[in-house]
Length: 107
Image (cartoon, rainbow, N blue to C red; front, side):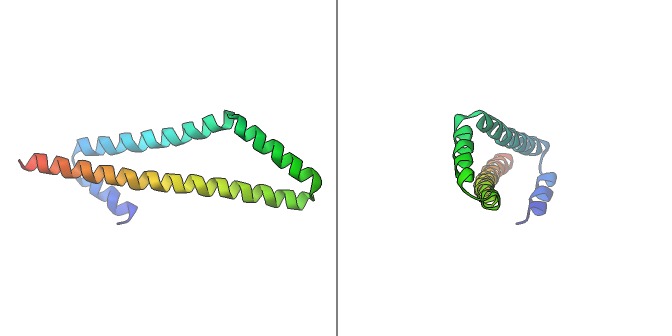
């Protein structure tokens, strides 16, 4: 099922299910942004920067750029995997909620 199919199925649902979906998406995005923001304040990022500075002082500038790019791509691939897992969990929650709402409405 593609994202467009999922959105279309949400449009066909009740207003309550659409509001729940909007709330979960907004909460998820806010959480991801908040986690990124809080990580920017952590001491771990400063120690990472210091270790990268120590590495670059003994290597060429081109190698330092390559190292920084690899570290950044590893970080973003980890974040992408986390977001992908969050989306799949959200789909599971929505399908369970929709099943419960459908079974309750049919009773």
